[in-house]
Length: 216
Image (cartoon, rainbow, N blue to C red; front, top):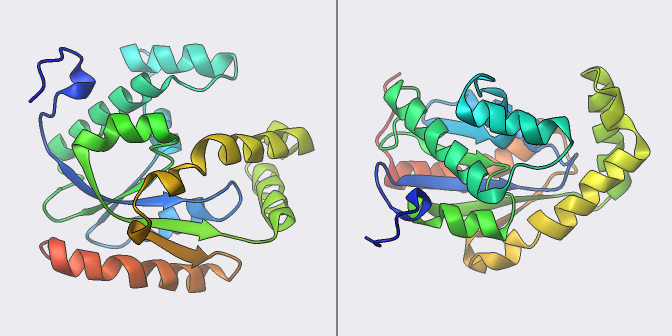
């Protein structure tokens, strides 16, 4: 173990076996994450759920609010610290059992810096890379979802395209960061059940090989 005093560099506590869910805004990651989360033996965590779960009066809740109020992203090291505390809490609560549950990471790591920070705590078995060739289809999905959820600002054209540009600049390079044998391409330009079937074909063998069957 390193002698570095920064807690991000000290590997303590559980080591998590995980699959990453990666794809551009509007590709359907949120939909797939929600469906996967209903399957016994799978624990899905999205960065959005993680931040929304923060107590606004807590240390990390206040830090998050400071950045969110001015429309900035939480710095990478703080994001990974928040993730560590979130995972520890879920293990303590018995919601997530690392020996039984395959961890699905959705939105974290968000970039290569976070990937390097999180690396000591996880083993990536597979990267589910959801792709859709028609960018305009994804833009329409984002706008439609934003209006449905009453997030009017997120439906504006400039916001939609900004989110796309951030993804291309920061998140998409993750695909080249990891060994290519870990990448599983998923054709997301299909009905949700077909996309889910593709994803399950990649992760069920991992569950069967590495995890104890969950108690039903």
